[in-house]
Length: 248
Image 1 (cartoon, rainbow, N blue to C red):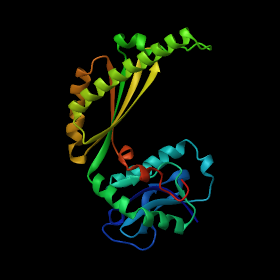
Image 2 (cartoon, rainbow, N blue to C red):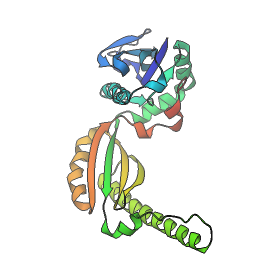
Image 3 (cartoon, rainbow, N blue to C red):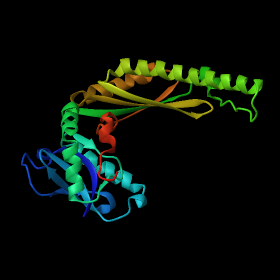
Image 4 (cartoon, rainbow, N blue to C red):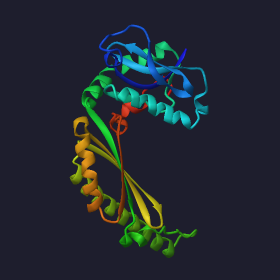
């Protein structure tokens, strides 16, 4: 039997403090393709799974929401280490082997992320001073002096966007004061760029974090600011946990 995996957690969190030796049904939780969801025990951990007999490549878009819904339900109970969408273990042994191999990393990660939550900030920057920097420079098809001039111009505009993004991210960090952060930036159109920021915070400070939003929205000029969360700590897993699976 293949297992579709959503996340890993401390099994006692899902079983009312009781350590089980057999997979236990999680009542009231529906998984990918409407399947039942189980807590599959492995030592002190539980891997949250559903039976799977389909094709990973044919998982529909709605599977992303179904996957996130299960992870979110477990996150409300305690610390989780989410698996990426489409993580499948071909059989019981593959699942148990993955946990055995990564037991120490799982333990350290659970300890690190215990009591933590992830918040998201999206900043859509529409700054008149950046209008020229937002316009793409088209490189000519032929090499030569004109090509080098355009290449330098393109690099200059990229540096200008990066400088603006760094300055805003520093300002956001000071306003929200997270434990950790991950930042990405991309050009949206000829007049704007999107800065996507994930913040790791203490779960007890969620309300305080949310209250800082109004102040931040006033201080961050020429920005449209959107906040969401709390979420499971998707962006703050060690790299090896992002891809661990029997066949992910």
